[in-house]
Image (cartoon, rainbow, N blue to C red; front, top):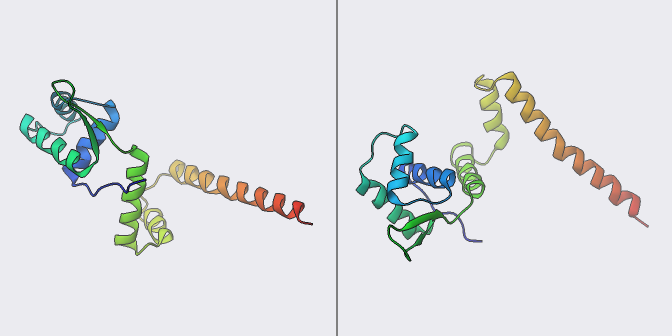
Length: 140
């Protein structure tokens, strides 16, 4: 699978709009950006951003009809995963623990958020332990 392209903040904002809508014309994307409180970008600005995203391979353009329809070429989750990994590498030298501890120590997470994170972290660990025991039981 191809790696997701590097996106500027403005391009990423347009991508978020496309993920929300599924697909859109320039006018529809612009209207959604305005509705979400992204200011009032000019139609030509949104058209330029969508053109750049198409050139980067981040969106697919249906040119069979007019106005053109733009849709994301990558799932939101895969782009977020790549961006998070890049951020982790650039800012925290790849040390996830340092990033998580930074969030916890900064007190930017609520107690409910911390509990939810703890549950999510424990769930894969419990699955790994069960799989490990199952493998041990099957050894000759």
